[in-house]
Image 1 (cartoon, rainbow, N blue to C red):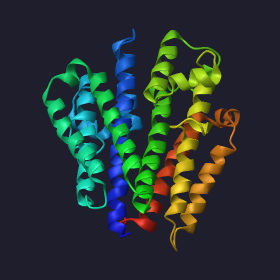
Image 2: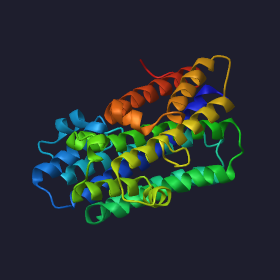
Image 3: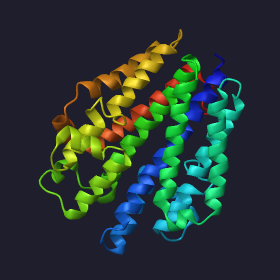
Image 4: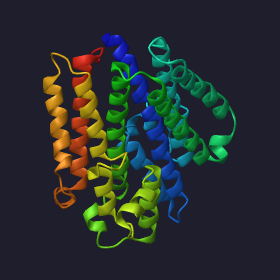
Length: 318
């Protein structure tokens, strides 16, 4: 496959997944912002979201104050923000259009219709009156895109590059969503094992729901929600679809399917990341520090993405 074609497929998938995960992160904050709290606590939560998304400086350049509706507008509508939902879904459509002949008609139509529907929804007042409904729509369209891709495309290199992009992006965003709590109050998960306030309980519950993990948590643990178990579920459980280990399983598998003469080192790098998760223990992670573990994982995922670009895709600009 031509590297440019692979590049478009890879980034189409990454941008679609990024839009979904931006919606998930925003939805957590919308839900928790409705809990009883001071204005300072509320602003701190929104600032944490910007911080973990590495968008604080860009936001501060554009806005004089920090309020929830401004953060939502910046992370949903702003085309100048490359991680906004508008920018992500636009880029996903443009990448799909560039390789339209490689995609099935159904996959292209989903990408195109999502972009058209987004324009109509943003012209309405849905985002202001019911932001959670808008975020659910974004998640639904992402699910639909993945389902149609798996259900209609030949299982060849095109699909493997699409899935590689999807799970690299998902791993990155799951780590960020889990780390928002640290940025929000600088409280470690280990400390929270000693007891949770009512507000913390609702926060962790909202986060589980944002990652489609609330029912899974109840099924696996059959007990009260604790931050340590949430961390274990979202990091080390290979049977949890959005966990870091599940994502790395998919990354390693799809890298193997598209391997070439220069990708052996990248495969080893990805295999090491998976092995650390596969054989890791949550007690060791908490003892080392959840934030430090997630920070290192995010750096490794960034490096892995660069290696994939170097070995298979159009090289990233220096």
